[in-house]
Length: 186
Image 1 (cartoon, rainbow, N blue to C red):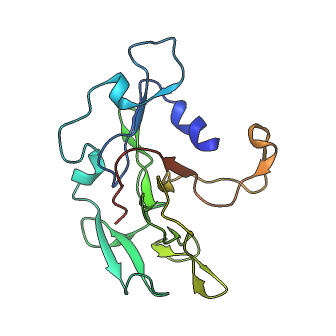
Image 2: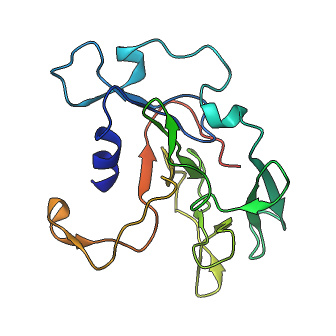
């Protein structure tokens, strides 16, 4: 619920993913009286570029993997243009300009490893979640791209009446992108 409110608050907006191949929704520009979110294939033409997300073309961010995938020490770091580690949660901007937002994919569609931003580690790299010292997996491949909106936070001390009084989880705002394409998380 909180994610939908953040995204729908902007007017004439398209939302792009930092590492996803296309914007995944926009507000309906053809019908100004429509306040609901409308998918791009019904509201406007999708870019023909390989990636329409503005940030993927910005050489300001690179990805660096450390360790072997599916191990406890595996991390995915984001680097700025000077090869300095930066946080995908704190340092990547939420807004791209012109009402567009970044979205960090943590778990790509059709994968089962439960990946997440390590909120308790310096530079908040993406890592595989653990429970009782063991790597966590979904029992099936998920059918959506899952991630976060950078520079957001769900306050654990506030109850949200729109979701039956649920409290925030002390993490960035979650995003579920339901589309045809698999997002590239790293």
